[in-house]
Length: 112
Image 1 (spheres, rainbow, N blue to C red):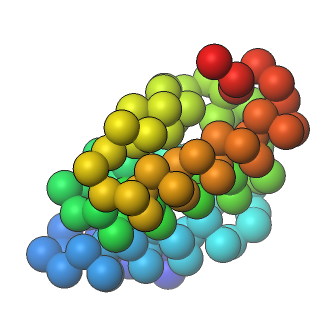
Image 2 (cartoon, rainbow, N blue to C red; image 1 turned 60 degrees about the vertical axis):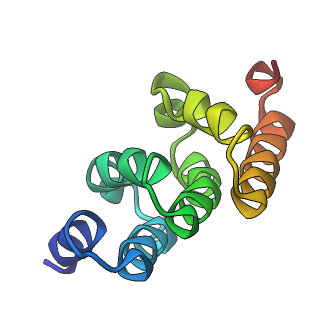
């Protein structure tokens, strides 16, 4: 299965571009069954040491929300987005703010 390759690429390669693209690609697969495979790599990517991976993961949260709003609501993913608002990298902050803005438009409960 191709998803297994994406999971492996999201976790193991030393290249942050490969990790980011793996998470982004899994987020673009708009199938509900992908959620169980995407959740852990996405959580890891939101806390990745590389800012490119974090900014990519922030946008991926909105894609996950489009597929399954309850998964985003029931996990600490939104808390991770709020933590990224204080990131040292401006692109990470901008993407986190954009993701939170999009989520709050769909459901005001995400506003703090």
